Amino acid sequence: MNSYLLNRSLGVSGPQALQQVQTTRLVHALQAAPNIRFDSSDDIGPAQERRRHGEDEEVGPDVWAHRAGVNCLVIDKFEGRYMLSGGAESSITLWDLEGAENTAKSYTHRPVGKVQKSSSTHKFGITHISFYPFDSLAFLSSSFDHTLKIYGTETLQVSASFDLNSVVYSHALSPIADHLLVACATQHPAVRLVDLRSGASTHSLAGHQGAVLSVAWSPRDDHILASGGSDGTVRFWDIRRSTGNVGVLDLDDSVGILGQDGIGKNTRRRNSGKAHIGACNGVVWTDNGNFLVTNGHDERIRVWDTSTGANTLSHFGPIVKNSHLSTLLPLLVPTHVTPPGKPIMCYPNEKEILMFDALEGTLFKRLRAPGVAVAQAKSSTGQRNIRHRVTSLAWRSGHVELYSAHSDGVIRAWMPRTKEDAEVEAEEADHYGGDGDGDGIGRRGTVCQDKASEYLISGGLNIPTWF
Image (cartoon, rainbow, N blue to C red; front, side):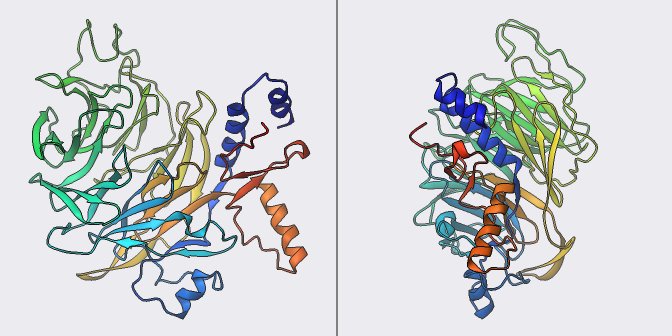
């Protein structure tokens, strides 16, 4: 750390280099924060009230975000303040993550809003949820009830609804495009495009031989779309073309297709091949669009060079688990948080979260989710046993914080806790006569280890003005 401070003072390196070193250190220090809870139960009894103010450390079965299980999570990328969660019982809940900003110890979040059930809301479980990419005042949700819906974040009222006549597993809206086309992965063997301007399903992109499970727009080209299906193929689409299909990825091709660009211009086009031996239920682009990360039921994660379509042959080991038909998306930590060329990926692996080097496949850390292997969940049909499984991941923008959704109905927080945090907490406990059990999780910041950098990095991202 001293070398980075010296280089910064001499003008050799910029403030971003120091920031990335510190935030990378915090990412590697992520661990479970059991003192941060999300409780959506309707009744607040004495036990819940004590937990809300940090007076009761035991988490009972009455603390849950969605009683039947949490299927998906998303956090707005502008403020990093509001989080939406979609439940297996068709409910959607809005949470304010800044509710615990000034709380050093335990805190229980309560919903700031819920979508009230009506004739216009979803009837079955939520499959995917996302904020509008240009404004967090609106969000989209898809469901097993065959519909895609648009809500206002402030009112939590449905503003538009689209019936696609088949189960919608996931959807995606381009973060850079002027068009307002929502790509939908449905049970139908074609990618469905819904135009939010006209309010109609414009056309379909046919090519998959089974259900489409995941879709993702390119962050670099507003007309390029990638999709993964139950047939094991990953296809690229150009929505400007009448045929649409640009080509497919082949797991046996480590060379790729070379040409003037990465979408087959003036080169041969690959029309056959499989990316996974089994269904592909996860497709994610890196921030710069240079790589595509996919995962499938062959329990493999593969990284592809999008300029050539080549398999980079990154190997993530035999510990990867994936057997559910629902969409399972890896989370790529924002590139401004990690060193250049060293993207970090978090993968929801059954009861744990695996942290990898996204390009090399090196396993950094295994974040174990606390809890029993089988939990009881309640729904309108009664009580049932479900496996405790990680279903979705969300990264809080502007902070080094990770949140995970679980099939047992719980939302869990993962926050950095370094050795310096533990030492500071022990000193505070001794000073105030506490028990020194490290109840605080290092939530509001991390103290740097060198005297030359004795400042607090709030949330791990804000560099002091004197740098």
